Amino acid sequence: MYRIVRKETLTPIITLMEVEAPRLACAAQPGQFLIVRADEEGERIPLTICDYNREKGTVTIVTQAVGASSKEICALEEGGSFADVAGPLGQPSEFISLPDEELKTMSFVFIAGGLGTAPVYPQAKYFHERGAKVDVIIGAKNADMLILEEEMAKVCDNLHICTDDGSKGYKGLVTAKLEELMAAGAGYTQAVAIGPMIMMKFVTMSAKKFNLPLVVSLNTLMVDGTGMCGACRVTVAGKVRFACVEGPEFNAYDVDFDEAMRRQAMYRTIEVEADHKCKIGRGK
Image 1 (cartoon, rainbow, N blue to C red):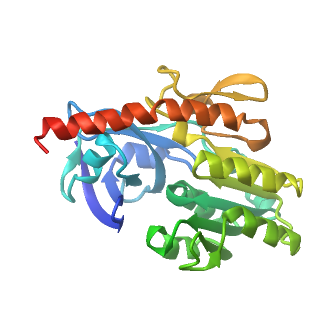
Image 2 (cartoon, rainbow, N blue to C red):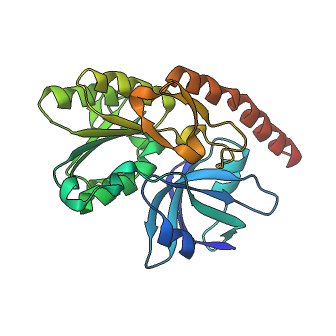
């Protein structure tokens, strides 16, 4: 059993949990993910690693309650336990292989959309601690949907908040803020975008205008987390790749986003139906 040592409600539908998993915490790297099961009969759910503490032996996950299984996870209480926590899985960020001296010469900009802020955090933290210049752009529909704002501000040089309705920070999309910064001479050497598939597609279009190298994370495609189910298949540079085992990060300019979004939509109806059946089964 994997005990939940801390639970925090970030928004009405987004929950943060710190979970005891010593072996996983010792091996985890930025960019990787894990799989949890709420109980013995629960579905296996892949979640990106938001943070890890090797000394305490804990990992931090952030879950948005959108379907039956994610709602079951969010309903667990502090002091309770997961039946299983497996990982780390997937490939870590390619940039962690670079020596610190090289990282110090780099200037990163991370573009995070909604829940994508969670997997951006460990990467921003890792590179900032090693002397790289790190800016972060966080986008959300409104101020109430922003997460990890204070934590992120501590691990980057400049934090730019964007909200669709202008309730906090810049009024507009993250793509507009990125283009504004690049036009003003930000001089980033590498961009990383993590968030909804449609956001990453348009960030790619914006970055291309400035020939800005860009990596995207296709973690939203994952279902079983091992590549065996085939749900994470995506065309990258004309070849079929599996986001679970070969990613989740890829060169943005090689990704067929339209295909990825079609594949993602295939499972949305299934999840809604599962949530409906779950409610019926519980007499709601």
